[in-house]
Image (cartoon, rainbow, N blue to C red; front, top):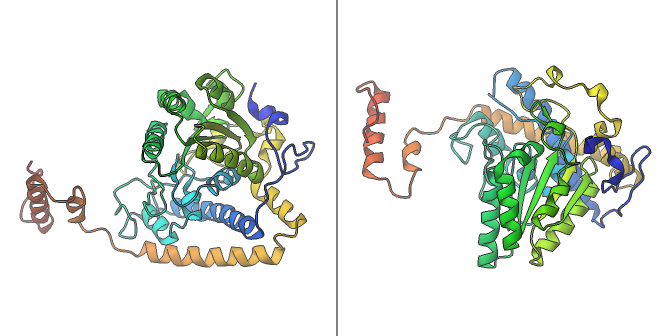
Length: 371
């Protein structure tokens, strides 16, 4: 039995065929609704464009987010400027929503000087101190104890920051998940664990990850609240995240939120989901497009017209085209930066390695870097 086949008990704001709302819509300004919709649309447009660039061989790798835009933006939009985000693979839209420049986003995927990390991370490992967005960890779930540690540090400093720790359903099978939740609850750390349960850990179905009905129920064992949410409903995600956020701000400790959603494509640009997944057997409700669902509600509430959306889409397309053109022709990082950026002051060993590298590239010397 999967939680994806049990939609009745999930927190829901936006109506769905045969399923009524069970939670009130949050009271948000019209500008906030438009901002959230814009970011969701940007994620969808980036997915389409970046997958095309990867297929053309212009970038090496991409992790799409299509189908999970509501879970990403509904939760990430709650974070304030001083809060920190510890992402998994699909949360880069939060960094963009928080002001991460598109040219730096593209620079990271191309691995050039526009990338704040100077091309030293794998694609999709976006990171920005300016928007308080920490690089994802490729090893599954290692970001969770890191996020808990950051939350404890925030509590000790008294700076009021709340930590947003993202994970997929596969991460719940790792020991880091259990260690992080236990430690966070004991210390009443101001951290929110946000699980995007899209039903698959690459090709492993959720039913083979756990015998429990969902992820949220696991919270009880650690002494924290757990809430299962319709992850395709951006307003339900926003409402529950705000509740967990305010709880953390009051010093009452962590919470575990489970956003039940659906990955519309593959795990990454390297994956073919048709080899292991039969969508004909998936409950229809979870296949509903979260972008279309939010759009329909915004139209009903007279918060977004068709012409408004056309203008937003045109502005986003123009910004994307400009950013890609700039990033694709940007220079590679200087070789010297690989050594000078390791520590504040270069050690003698790094200095020798830099000198050796300079000789190697000029063709005057070969061999391993001297230690």
